[in-house]
Length: 638
Image (cartoon, rainbow, N blue to C red; front, side, top):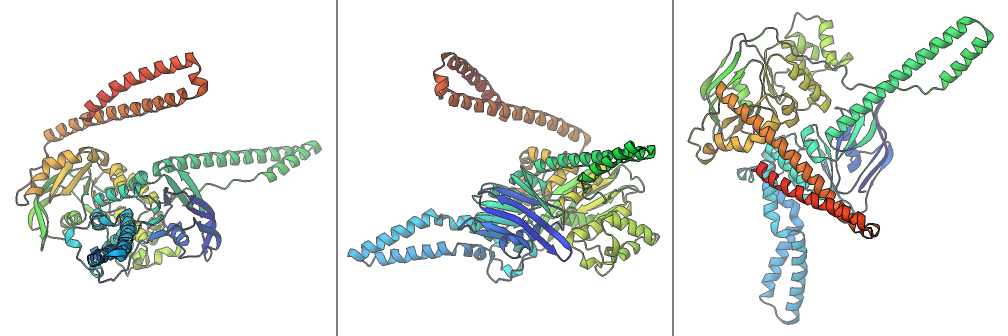
């Protein structure tokens, strides 16, 4: 065990954030801290690193362990370059390397015993330098920078010139290179694109130390963590497994708690009815029996009513009118900024009812496409056409469409003047703004609160074509799930940009990947995209990668092409299912084969002839079946 938190409590005024919670982290363990916004996740991390004192309880680290903490927001104004800032983490190794070079120079002009001493010193330092992987300093720094989405052109930029998101990526890179025994990461993927998130997943899975992560990306948590620490109404509960395992166990516990509560309530009502009936008999014996039941009832430990998270948050998108079948047609769209060409000759169409996600690396122009469609940005070339009766509802990730100086009530009433005060309050209440919250200024809201307000305005718009830019940013997992359900049930059309792979998987019926300045079309959700990404990237984006002046071949858009792609998708899924079954059976047989070897090494087995014969026959049968399965696996893998 590398970290232990015992009986941790923390309150701010009358608000109890953590109420006597305990958990521990083993060496090399990867754990997530989850809970709704405001549950106290960041507070818990700050208590662990010692930035905040708990009201009660103890945080204990194993002796000699180091801890590193990534905060959500970074305010670094160093004049150092990005590369030098990360290289500074390896200062001890750089000094060691400098000392080796100096000794090498001295040895050229030294002899006798002095030379022997220098050689001994050189061997000792070089052994330590090699042990600490000193010869790979530069490649390690470059690997982390590129993994976090920095190009070589970025390496020379000064830290003070970077955006907040870029500074956070620099801080994350420095932390990873410093390799503490425990990594505490507070929303580490907020400013990463899909490829950088995938890189970080692999990095953390192979990280030798322990990791504690606060993140709302369920795909990321499923891939990385093996333990979930939940903060719920001040209580801390640990669950083994990834996020999906936690969600399933949590649902089972919630269902069991509701059943127990309802059964107890039913029993209490039943006993109260019996007591009232006995008393109504007005007989001494009946009254005594009633009093006896009353005493038993008083001894019952009444269960608290389970709290349903976000049970009072209601989100439902309802188009006021139905659009035509052809919602959007984009033809030959191009856009570039000085020294930064984004995309060339984009062509795609969207039909009524489709849920289309645009994905791609940071800086490729995804948000720019949405801005062009909302006439907030002009295209260099090309045009787009909206279909009959199409009404757009737009959600921008920076919430620039919100007016910072207005109150929440004003933000709604100024757009919808016909709504009464009561109606506005009811809408805001359905997005968890109650009481005096409705008179807060927009600039006083957190990122998650602004997101909920923007969703409330979007819901009221009754648009039939929703264009959403990173709609899940700043939302906690429960709010994301509510948004997912609303989009799945929405009868209109949706086009959105998102880095949240779980959200994409739950809501998208089609994916457009912006890569090498062109769009690649995938008819399916994120799982399907992962199956086909390499094949279709080669088919549709490779020519631009080799020669930017050439136009990329157009992705299939006709019904015939779509039908063919769906047929290919069905075949590919069938192959993947067969491959999975084969791999599972191979694993099962190999494990059994190992068990047989272990059994046959036991004295009570190898001295039992009949048992040995039986196990030998089973081992031979396993070998025969494995041979067939290995061949089948090879065929399916091809």
